[in-house]
Structure formats: C-alpha cells, structure tokens
Length: 95
Image (cartoon, rainbow, N blue to C red; front, side, top):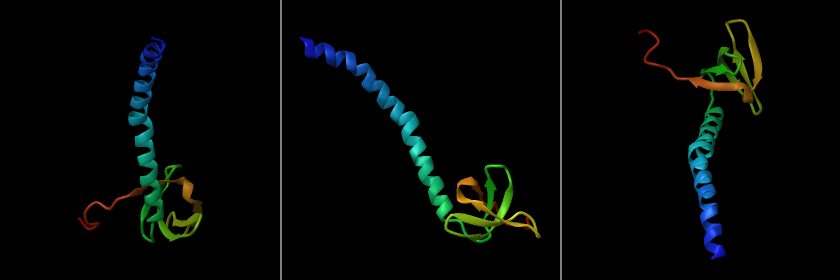
C-alpha cells in the first residue's frame, strides 16, 4: 500500500520535470549547439553583430579571437564569446 502512495505522490513531480525539460532545457541546448557551429563556420567577409550591438565584418578568424573591421580604417580583435549572431546576406547587394 505504501508503494502506491509514493508513486502517486512522485508522479506530478516527474511530469513537471519532463515538461520543464522539453520546454526549457532541450531548446536551450539546441540553440547553444547552433551558436557554436555558427562561430566555428565564420570566415573572412562575414558580417556579424556583437553583444554590444556593433555590426562589423570578419577580417580573420583566429583560435580564440576574431579580427573584425569596424570601418575602412579600424580593425580590432574581439573574443569569440562576444559574437551575438551572423548577418545573412539577403538577395544581391546591387538590388
């Protein structure tokens, strides 16, 4: 009789954990994998946005840092951890 009570009292906790896992933990892990793959695929000429909101162009990806061009004169090194996203090219630039 005790075993049935324990199972029925733990069942709501197990269900809540399963819901939490599928709604929070799993999508976050998927997003982290996509971000890591994006960072590894960066190459010269890609346009990125930093966590600070700067839009810049990749000059040279290195191991831990990325050399980026802010404008025609300024080239700086930023840590890969501060790259928020890569801007995708939409259509042709002449259009």
